[in-house]
Image (tube, rainbow over all chains, first blue to last red; front, side):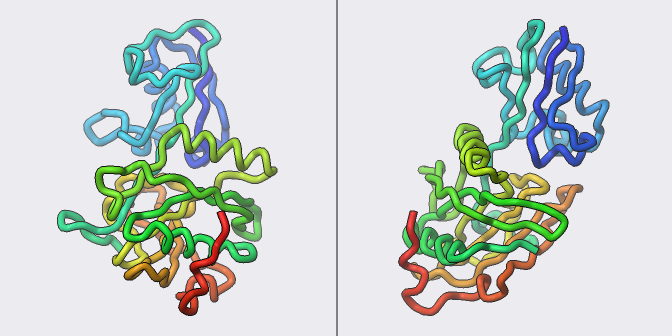
Length: 101
Length: 155
């Protein structure tokens, strides 16, 4: 199925400055894999080293968070839009972590 | 370099002081061109980390989308985020790095005992290994404000 993937602003520099990318996919996971195959630099920002979507990366199929659907196995319909939305987190040092600069 | 318009630096400090001992957070709305980045407005947000607000903050995807819409409505872009480090230095922690995005500017203000102190700005490197410092302009904006000065920001 043809699907459009919306790339968030901070990642567009890794996708030839494109704000959206068209691809053919059956599931959301397929589409994201195609995206990171075409634009390899995106991978480390979207996935952990063991291949899971990072916790602060939110993926929506149309207006629905895929966590409330079938996650990466969510099926795509013709004309769907996948949107990658950042969530933001951070915070000061604690006993278990160190400052890095 | 990142430029902060008018009293925006004071507003960030005021937010940090007001929310002390919890971490404050908000969005940086502004522009970017060949001359650098300029913050033209702020969008103060609620810290989503009710479980550990003294040393953590989080901004939901919904709030990120809302910040993007707020920026667009003002003809600006969402160029970064600010947060406070209560009783800790104004430099990124490992937790900050693990959760950061490239390209965005991350402004951190240290708040000690309720008084806002130095403020710094950082950008995550493309390989995610560390942050590079980003100079704040005007230079005085990064310095601690005189006692009482940072308490009167408006939101």
